[in-house]
Length: 562
Image 1 (spheres, rainbow, N blue to C red):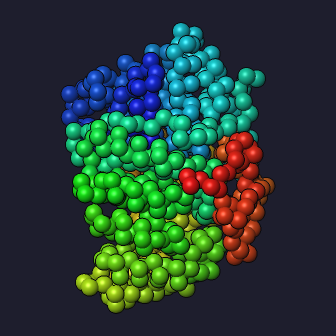
Image 2 (cartoon, rainbow, N blue to C red; image 1 turned 90 degrees about the vertical axis):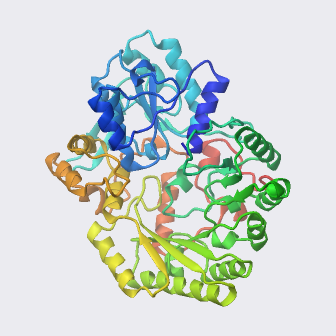
Image 3 (cartoon, rainbow, N blue to C red; image 1 turned 120 degrees about the horizontal axis):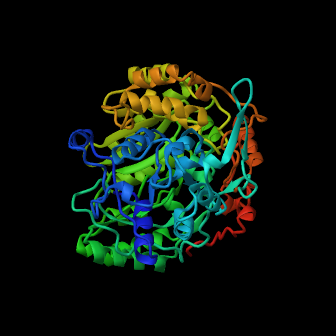
């Protein structure tokens, strides 16, 4: 319910079109048990209609391992999970979100994928459906596939080589495009944004007003999927954001405003925006919050503005423990910048710092892991020296997962055993008074299988769900043994997708998705990583040649909101 993309699409459809959109979520297993026992089909929250009453059922795929929940929800609704088993009497099942930039592992379950900015394509998709819903389903799908940004998997044939690598994907009809180009909103200032976001009856995880200050990121971190697929960078003006903040606060009663983007401190008007929001709403007890910050962009003045109303945990993301490895991943920050940032924060009264790192990055050594622990110790020492009270330093360490469309899409991923060995090394070497938490190695491994998988995985996904897999992102429900059995019974070697380096001439299952960033740019960035060479921020030092601006006929406005 917190997801801003869902709120945007909900308001867009209901407020600006003749279509109706309602919400449905996966029930927790105890409620599911009762619903299945009482034979209650899955229903929408607004009107309590069963999902089979709707024309289209859409899923926002934010995380690869949510696919078993999708199958479970379809089954609870009485909708066949395989697209080939659905005829005209069933809704179309579609999906969007970051995961569908490689839709192939899930292709056999969905009728269509919407690639790119949902606000740009969803209404066009629904209009086309509405105008053609009386024609045969196959003809309808062919019409939908001709909309830019719409991928209909059943209209394509896939081929594999003898060694099981992907060979080609070809359209089965001349009207169907060979490549699917993502949809992009060129101006966020004129794009729809909800002034009256739906307000849940219950408290939700991110229970606050949200301003999307910008979309996209130009930093070019080589591991970052979102930083590539959400290009180009687009900003909203300060005037637009202040109007949106005023409307949301008036219509919700929220007491906090969150500034959301992939890298909020890269928003060119961030200092002015924060100061004016705090000035306008601070005396009313309404605070402003920022997501994790880049250490090189940290501004103590900005931190002081934010903490005028409410102190929060300062979150920074160095990502790696040594300068060498940060250069490999193109994280253009230094130890000195981090130390200056935390020193300024502790001097100003911050008492809690959380730092994000990754383990398993390409070319990583034990020295890089020890470098994380040394950084944490130095941050703790700075805090103890400057703060008036004991400070808390926490580190969250995720396992690196190579993703499609990134410069690291050619790399092998660490096995679960290798990740666990590195985790054990760090826990053994960790000093007291530093809190360290790790992402589960086996869920990260499965995420890696899905992230670079192909259609052959659908058999294993179905078998895993049939065994009872669901809520795989929740540790109390994740069953690695069931997934292992499902892979084996389906004839799938998961290491083929994770523990294998790729050559530059290998064809990928996602290559037919045109994200606007050239593959040769990704290859050049990969070569720079091998050479431990960084690339500059294109909004500061000029075009990096990724191709996004000419491919989508946009101009990168380095002046931004200022």
